[in-house]
Length: 309
Image 1 (cartoon, helix red, strand yellow):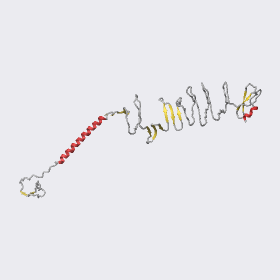
Image 2 (cartoon, rainbow, N blue to C red):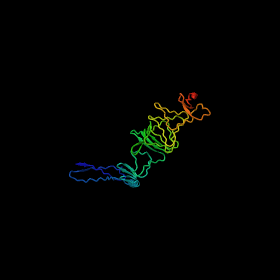
Image 3 (cartoon, rainbow, N blue to C red):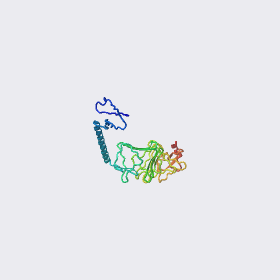
Image 4 (tube, rainbow, N blue to C red):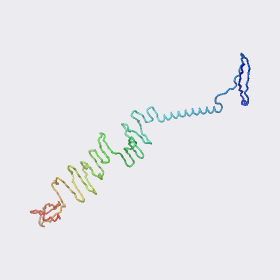
């Protein structure tokens, strides 16, 4: 004999309160007894308002997806995105190519900026245009600043070259070198130099005067092989408040002209009132001072040597 136990679950509001009944069946071997089917059925899923909220949320996500897709297509269309670039910006093998005018709100970092062959490059700003060169550590090694009132260059050396590569103008902390064949100053006040100037030639424009002037200090001209003054259609005039000194160490001072005129040279005692010869001789004092003395049959310089006192 074998005993079988069967548990039966009954659905309904009194399910918790109902006791589980056990049926004990005693059968003999060979007897077939049908077992009762399990009456406990559980439904799996979301029903009611939860289901409606889920469908509404999925629908909202689908709408957002479609709106984002439409905005993406619109942005691509407005910004002119293409496989080669965006709008007037093209990506080439040499870098970026930008057509037309562009405005940069923040600093632009580039290795090289150049225009097309048939157009010029224009850099414009309402305040100033600044170009900086930096080293590998980020320090500024050179700067070009174009402002509303001045152009400022900050570098160890400033150099201007011609298209052939010839140096035209070079400036550093020690000197300024002009590499052109001619430096021309057209201002009415000329050029003002606070220190010395080294040049092989100082020349004025045709039919213009050349003036070398030092208002409050001395003017010195030195040359290893000589200083030459030359004028083709005028005169050479040297004016000084004090002394004008011509000094030669190993040579001599030569006045080579048809007439040498010393109009304000001091004169000695005049000759007799009836004398009409008006001939004079030039006398030299021990200190080099010159004076005139009335000529006679013999020298009259000792008679007028009081001029040297």
